[in-house]
Image 1 (cartoon, rainbow, N blue to C red):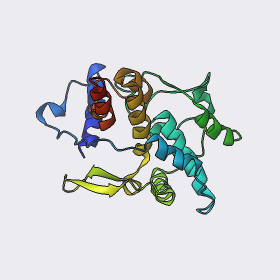
Image 2: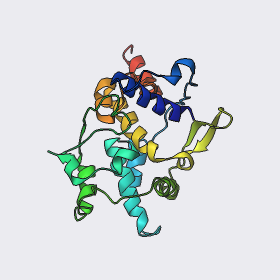
Image 3: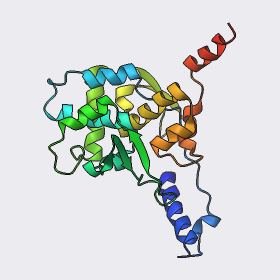
Length: 232
């Protein structure tokens, strides 16, 4: 609920900034801060296990959904932007788009270079007239992601916040994976490599000071080991 209120408040701020209204109902209303747990995502090894898995035993649509999920893991966009991408969004070996979620705050263009895995996926759908990838429903996509990850054996236990109790609970990754897991996979693995929030945010489309993005700055065990080894 608070997420919807934040989006409404963004629209109202945009209207006030442009002189369309001077009335801000949120001046007298406190929105509950959204709760963010530590982000969970596929490791590069898990991602590649999904990328190369033989899904022929699942049915014809599953390899297509796997391609869509893997492409999202490789460019890190939100699902709302992914489903809008067309061939016109590919410029000089990069995907370029203006994120829908933040375009009212800042209409900056996100530009993400495509690696060979992403290019190979696009090659399989080059005959589509305009769309970059086959179109899909959000609900159907989430369902297929869970089924594919379970089939491939991505069952590592992760800690997540229960939306009802707000307590952290352990769940197999495939059970809680969604379209947003692809975005977190892109961001989380890049952050482990370069540890530069500004560079990564320029490719993920996060707004400046995003609390959601700040979660990735938590030092993980591997980064702790790197620091300790400096003292060896």
